Amino acid sequence: MSTEAKSTEAKHDGLFCELFWGTTRNEVWSFGPEQTQVLAAQDEKTALPLYGFTLPEEPFLLAERTEKGYRVFVPPSARVERSRRGDAFRPVPEAELQRTGDRISVELVREDLLRLREGELALHITHSVAGKREASVRLRDLGWVAMGAALFLSLPVGFLFAGPSPEKMAESNARALKAAREREEAERKRLGVDQPARPISPDAQKPDAGVKTLPANLGVH
Image 1 (cartoon, rainbow, N blue to C red):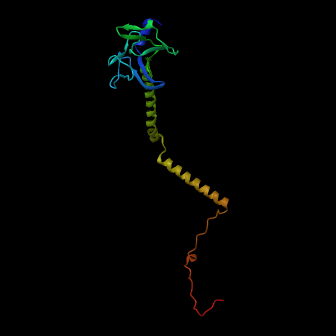
Image 2 (cartoon, rainbow, N blue to C red; image 1 turned 90 degrees about the horizontal axis):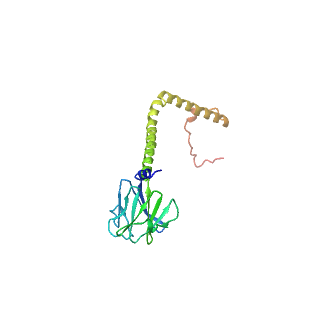
Image 3 (tube, rainbow, N blue to C red; image 1 turned 135 degrees about the vertical axis):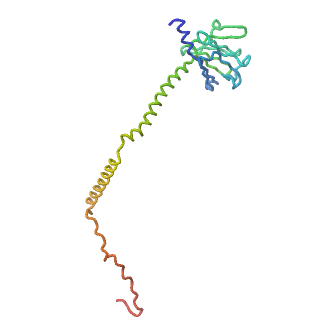
């Protein structure tokens, strides 16, 4: 791939920053390719609130876009290290540092991961294509959402047009009742009570004569 092609491709990248305290990641920031400068300060109102680093002024120009990617400016009390293609971090050689007055900067190319360290703090800086990835994910997710919504809305409409008519529902209910009666009859036969019990005759329902009280001088033998 030519240098011109690499430069064109790099213009579509953003910048991704992670702030670590020891081995614990505390903050994450992502900046799109349209943001040509990334400013840092010990202030939540800045694009990158960078507490714990010694900054010569605030806001401090941390990174700016170049034709090849980004130029990262190193705070005066920080050490700068680089990991290339996943290798271990190593100090950036002095020959690769650019000095303009009191400012020190280093070029950040696509396969680089820079680490600025001061005390227990470490700021990781690398290229990010999250904008493009998120856009593709959003488009894919929107497609799935649209398909799901269409399917959800089609269910009640399909039920209205293809669902059972009142006549079919009545016929289905009649079949269910008939099946229930057949199961009841079969159970009666199994228990030997297939003949229904005779209803009680009106004569059998006459009230009892009750208990008669005998005179006290009569015994019962």
